Amino acid sequence: MNYRVIFFSFLLVGMYQVHSQTAISVDIVKLSEVMLEENPIIKRNILSINSAEGGLQIQSSVFDYQLISRASFSRDALNLFEADPRNDFLDDKLKSRSTGVSVGFQKTFRSSLTANLSVDYSMANDNFPINRFNQNVGSYFGDHSMSTTFSLTQPLLRGRGRRIATALEEASVLNLESTNENIVFANSFELLQTGGAYWQYVAATKRLKIFKENEARVRRVLEITEELVKADKRPAGDVFQVKADLANQERQTKVAEQSLYSAKLNLGRAIGLSEEESKQLGDPLDEFPSILESGYTKDFDKKKYLELAQNNRKDILASKKLQESIELQFSLAENNKKAQLDLTGFVRYGGMNMGNGVDRALATFSRNEGNNIGYGLSLNLTFPINNNLAKGTYKQNEVALKDQQIAVENLERNINLNVSIALNNLDNTVEALKRAKESLDFYQEVYNNEQVKFKNGLTILLNLIQFQERLTFAELDYLRAHQQFASAIINLRYETGTLLVDKNGLTGISKELFYTIPTYN
Image (cartoon, rainbow, N blue to C red; front, side, top):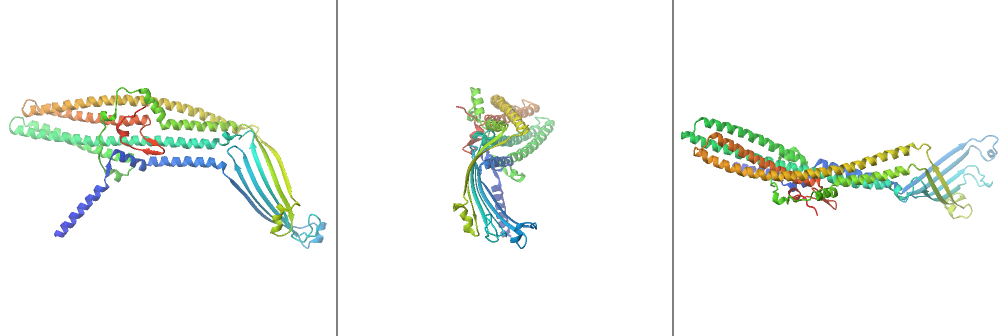
C-alpha cells in the first residue's frame, strides 16, 4: 500500500512539472518575437515577398541567353512522269533523303542590342546517280551544306536605349523594394495589435485582482457588521444590505474572470497561437510603463515628429517606390507608341561539299571550293496603322501614374493628421493618468477613514458602501488610464514608423519600443 502511495505521489509531481513546463511565459518582448514567427498574416506577407521576387525573375529572363536548336529528317519518294529522262537511270521511284541540324544562341543586352549566333548544317542525297555537275557519282551521294551567321540588331525607335530596355526589370526591382517596405509596415501593425492585446491582458489581470480585493473588502465589512449587530450597535438589516453588496461584487468578479479569459485568448490570437496554446499563457510579467521611464516631456517639437514619420514610415517609402515603378512603365508605354524600326547587321560564313562520310561533312568549312562569305544590312519596319494597343496602354499607365501620385499625397496628409492625433492623445493620457492617481490616493484615504468611523459608530453603513464603491471605481479608472497611456506610446511609435526597427534586413524587438516614446534628432 505504501508503495502505491509513493508511486502516485511521484506521478502527480511529474505531471505538475510537465504542465508547468508547457506554460508560455508572458513577456512582451518574447511574445512579440514569437508573433513575428507564428503570426499567419506575417507568414502570408513573406509569401508576398517571394511572389515579388518571382516577378523580378520573370522580367530579368528577357536578358537570359537563349539556346535555339532544330533537327529534321525527311524521306521522299517521287513517281516520275514517263517522259522524265531520269527514268533511264532509275529502276523505281526517285527516292531522296535530307537531314538538317541547327544550333543557335541569342542574347538581348540591357543596352537594347540583340546578338544572334547560329550554325546550320544540312545534308541531302537521293538514288539518282548523276550530281548537279552531270557527273555519275552513284546513288545516295551526299550533298553537304553548312553556314554560320552572326548578327546584331539595334532598335532605332521603339525599344531603343537602356532605360526602355530595362524599364520592366527596373520596375520589378522597385516593386520588390516596395513590397519589402510595405511588409515591414504591415508587420509593425501586427506588432501594434500584439502590444495592444498584451496591455489589455495586463489590464484584465489587474482588473480581476481589483474585484477580488474589493470582494475581500466587502467580506471584511460583512464581518465587522455582523460583530456590530451581535453587540447591538447596528440593526440586523445592515447585514442583508452588505450581503446584497457582496453578491453584486461576486458577480463583477465573475465578469472580470470572463474578461481575463477573453483577453488571454485574444492575445494568443494576435500572436498566432491556437486555442490550446493560448490557454497555456501565464500571468503577464511586465508592468505598465510609468510616465518617468517613458521619457515624456511636455515641450516636444511637433514638427520634428511629423518629419520623423515622413522619414521612417515604410508605407510612404513603399508608395514612393511604387510611383517610380509606374513612372518607368509609363515611359515604356510612351516609347511603345513609336514604330518598330530595327537595323540588323550580319556576317555569314559557310561552305558546301559533296561525298559520303563524316570527313566530307566537316570539310565544308575547311575546303576553299564551295566556300561562301557574306555580310549585309537589313532595315525592318513594323507599325500598326491605328496603333490602338500602344495608345490604350499609354492611357492606362498615365491614369495609374496620376492615381499613385494622388495616393502618395493623400497618404502623407493622413500620416500628418494621425501623428498629430497620436501626440494629442499622448498628452491627454498623461494628464488623465496623473489625475486618476490623485483621485485613487484620495479615495483610498477617505475609505480608510470611513472604516474607522463605521467601527466607532460615527457613520452609517450606506456611506461605507458608497465610499468602498468609489474606491473601486477609482482603482478601475487608474487602471484604465494606465492602459491607455501604454497604448498611446506604442500607437505614437506606430504612427511615426518607429515601432518595428528594421536594420540591414534584421528586425529588432526591444523593451524600449513599448515603454518609451520615440526620440528625434
